[in-house]
Amino acid sequence: AQSVTQLDSQVPVFEEAPVELRCNYSSSVSVYLFWYVQYPNQGLQLLLKYLSGSTLVESINGFEAEFNKSQTSFHLRKPSVHISDTAEYFCAVKGGNMLTFGGGTRLMVKP
Amino acid sequence: ETGVTQTPRHLVMGMTNKKSLKCEQHLGHNAMYWYKQSAKKPLELMFVYNFKEQTENNSVPSRFSPECPNSSHLFLHLHTLQPEDSALYLCASSQALYNEQFFGPGTRLTVL
Image: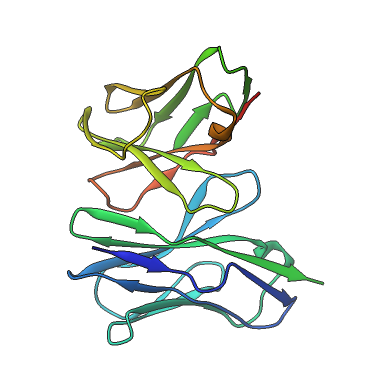
């Protein structure tokens, strides 16, 4: 069995503050890890992914995530958020022939 | 057109109506998916097609009927839906099964 847990359903934060969105997973096989972002009234867009190699991966808009195998985590971080980062963020894990999404975390950036 | 497109973007239907949702991908992918996204619930995978063949049906009620005539097109036929079926229906595609998925903008369905 495989599962993904996003511990926080909502994260309010002020503009220019740092943020961490947490993702933990369980799987009995090697995994690939993804973060997707969903802006209001849109579909999901891939933000970043870990397939192999360096455990720290970065997106083009300043987000980064670190794969921690011992803690089975793939937390998403940004050192300084913008209003435009307000969205729902989904962590997903592919293990074998299964892709599992977390429940999502709504990031609310306040001015 | 590029990426994954879905039509219509919004749909309101009565419980006795029959309607269809359409998804088209212009990425040359081989796998396509239907997801249901309801408020305050996790994303639910409904159906999976790989090279036009259905590989997964996650216990979806028969009032939802998928069709995949080719690797670029995916339909979801709807009939005698219930109000609790109101949700955002997302289509996605990937090059290989369960690899990185590209999503369409979704169809917002309201069942009256």
